[in-house]
Image: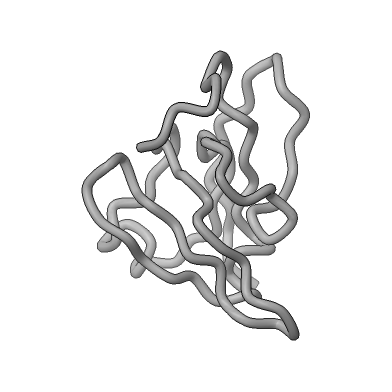
Length: 93
């Protein structure tokens, strides 16, 4: 079993990335110990805009820190814990 990195702050309720709403900005609070995430620029505190979640166990498409778009598989997305960024006000990354 992989270890999990955590950074929990008070405020918005935490949800896993697979259940996050599209077109909302989230901050990563807990990540599985998967090297690929770091290579994709997803680290604790990273701002993530959920672009789309495909049905039937498909990937979650994210905009990472307004830099690039990536897709994360369902199994990994369920292990990434996020909180809605405070005051995102519908701002698009």
